[in-house]
Amino acid sequence: MIDSACAQDDSEREFLVADLFSGAGGFSLAAHACGAKIAFAIENNRHASESYRQYFGVGNRSDAPCLYSEDILTLSADKIREKHFSEPGQCDLLLGGPPCQGFSTHRINNAGVDDPRNGLVYAYFDFVRALRPKAFLMENVPGILWSRHKNYLGKFYEQGLKAGYRLFDPVTLDARDYGVPQRRKRVFILGVDEGLDLGAFQWPPAPSHGSEKARTEDENLLPWVPCSTVFIEAVPDDPNDRHMNHGPELIEAFKRTPLNGGSRKDSGRILPCHENHDGHKDVYGRINPSEPAPTMTTACINPSKGRFVHPTEHHGITIRHAARIQTFPDEFVFHGGLIAAGAQIGNAVPVKLGMVLVKHIKSLIAEQEKSCSVVSDAA
Image (cartoon, rainbow, N blue to C red; front, side, top):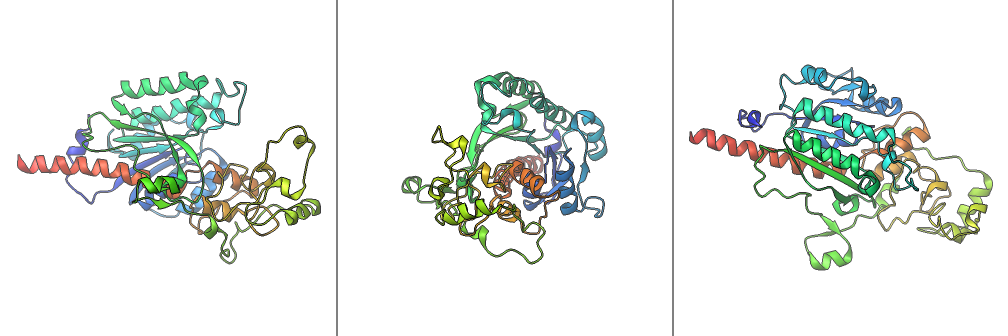
């Protein structure tokens, strides 16, 4: 099914990628850093698409991706394929994670079952069928694996198999195991054209970092990366060097919270919602810079939503701190204000993790083409 792969004999050819539900561009950044050309991206959120547009120079540079700032359900996958690829199979890798709120672990009591947003998973697959990429990689939250969502996941796999793809089992990866200074678990589903010879290919790629216990079993593993380096001085005039404004009472609570990892209880701040149970221990807590940061959620700049207080200063983390934890470069600017920026950061794939995954998949496709070239030369 992958005749186009064997038809190319140029090891320096462009590695072509499309990015659906791209958000601000974490996956696109990762692919670009791996030498890929982003043919197009689709993102309906106006703030995220503006961040993507500005960073990648959409409309201003000839080498910029084409960005569709529209609802994916209104777009024709076939027409977009015709515009960017002369025939199916020319796209090497299709990236993207459909909006994950319907699968979030914060949604309980069967909330999220039959959530309309979950149907966007199938819109993603419309593009798989139209583009016929050599591989596709979908990212989502761990909640997608809950039994209540098995019908959606089962249908996704069914469609993939019918379309001629070999799908690997879902894998839950923790970003800190790949050099990201953050504890962040996400599910990744990889599909490859059944015509690809997998050879010795293993999925997922082996972790590069691990806990102290893991390192005693594998001496090649590096220690998890602490988040201390993200709290270095900000770049001058950085528009994302901003944090929430806090009232005097909250600032005093932060002052009472021990530095470098202190919790809400240490500050004596007890709200009515805290009185009848011992949960929510991390809210209003300080980040411990000697460890990987907590997961950057869509509310990561709001200390009332998690352990998002600066390690030593008396305020929440800035947009830039959160972006660095997600391994975005400092020159990347998030547009739309504090809340919108936090949402974009929390929804993104950590750039460094994305690079590991894209590079791993790219090596599989490159090895396939190398093998085809050897066979062609022998003939």
